[in-house]
Length: 126
Image 1 (cartoon, one colour):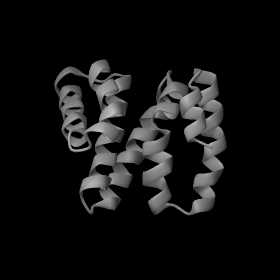
Image 2: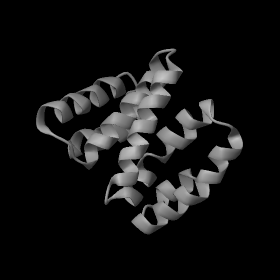
Image 3: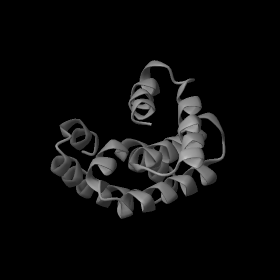
């Protein structure tokens, strides 16, 4: 799962058609083998894939909200917030929710990324 999570990060820009396949595979592995922090990455990226490759924005948003609730329950929440800030806040929430509510979250995402030591994630949230 860790390897698929890393490959998903790079496939968004280098091989976008591979991205939905990888995220679907991560969700299937979660169903077969159990839940871990990288399962949250697979779930959120599956929602992001739905948004990018289909017109079902509402389903993609709901999957993102489920992933967000899992992030808040995780002990590794700061690293997951910074890792998935672009997919959740930059895309899925920005389309459905009012801009004021999304902008208010970005400062919190920046703080989480800095706590996790992820300077790149902190820059994405600004």
